[in-house]
Length: 95
Image 1 (cartoon, rainbow, N blue to C red):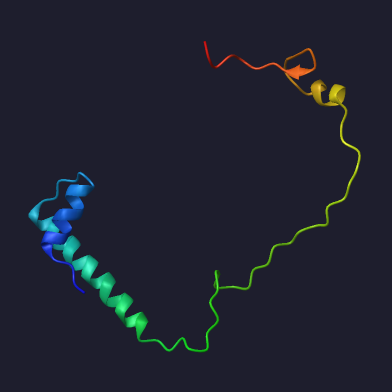
Image 2: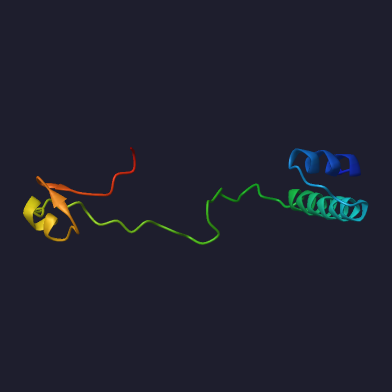
């Protein structure tokens, strides 16, 4: 597959970009280079390679959930800049 100037013009139109003829030629050349590189990657033998999501082995470090006492409503409201009737009071965002 190769990219033509018409393809670049079409994508530019969709993106509402105005490209000069020089830019169209440059992007056509660059996009074709990207596609050639992708084709080169397709030549690699990946038969015995497991699919991965990361290049390095990554694992989540999770701690066990432990049930413990929460803060009381009064303790939480001590940190609030403003509160009313046991609730946080924030500036109105709707009229």
